[in-house]
Length: 299
Image 1 (spheres, rainbow, N blue to C red):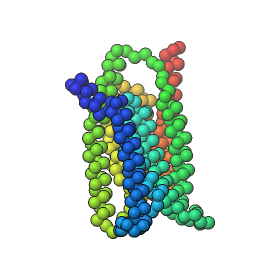
Image 2 (cartoon, rainbow, N blue to C red; image 1 turned 30 degrees about the horizontal axis):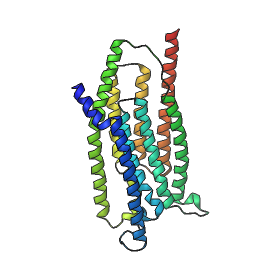
Image 3 (spheres, helix red, strand yellow; image 1 turned 90 degrees about the horizontal axis):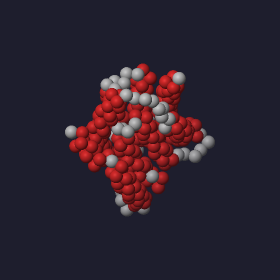
Image 4 (cartoon, rainbow, N blue to C red; image 1 turned 45 degrees about the vertical axis):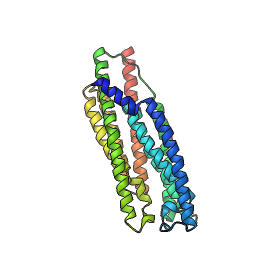
């Protein structure tokens, strides 16, 4: 059973599959950008009609939104790829995804930007300000999270402990493998539903903002379930307090990110930054626990 799982896992989530995915997404992103750009200019010159008021076709800047969407899809794949390898790396990928969503939203903000003296009274100008500041803060937090997650504390483990850890890794591989078809089905369903819903209305131009919520609100809901499962299963190989708190803290962080999709404006931005900052603080305290325990063992 373990050998069969390993073969299936290598076909979908191996280093080789990862490299193939990178090249495929790159080609698709370039092609989608050129197609979107072409449609924008065809609409601008009146060759195609019916999308005059669409924010998706408001200008060349809006075309950048499309390749970013495919990059985000690849980041979702990387999250699944890193799930069996490290909990902190898996969580970091979650934070990278929400940061890229904020960056992608900036291109939408730029398409709606109004340069005037009433900057702080215009909705889209305010959102642009929030997103610019949030992206810088998130980038800094991600740097700190990455540097802290690379901190490994050496500790002696018994053969029994190693056996428990190996079983946990096998479980995470199984979970990652199951997530692949679930996420493909979820992405296909949500995007298909969105397309049908928007094409059935005459107000396509007013739904540009909703694209941020397509797939990713359901995606982070699924991640909350995955995080809870990992927390519960982790009790089989450890019941150490600081590890339980770390994993529980990461769940809270994911929930805050999910909640951000239900609100707009400043509250949305604050929830995202608070979620990632909370995860960083949890990791820093956890590392301090590990460091102190290592010192005590050496003494």
